Length: 150
Image: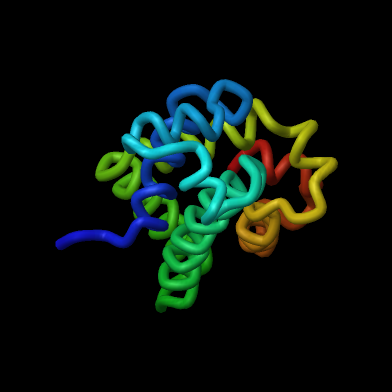
């Protein structure tokens, strides 16, 4: 099934950002991999930051959907949280690129994440931390402790 041009750009950008990190990839690199000009890519995304933001938004949307599905199920809160982590693990095995990019973003880009106006993973991580802190054994823990555990 053919994908549209924008999706192809996002797919390639996701792969390269996961492999090389935000600072290791240029718009020209992504365009070259697709056999296009830099201008063709800039027609769809005016800057590398906007392209990267859309890649992160797409990942965040997927993870939030998985999170909502797992956490809205039946069972004890700890069981639902475990179900979510299992779905994340399954997703990582099915498509390691997404999880590699997520880890790069969390570990390599913290300074940049603190300075950007919109950090696409903020809500996803906030909801996850809040869910963990609702468990009785985590109620007295700080947000940073919960985030580190996650």
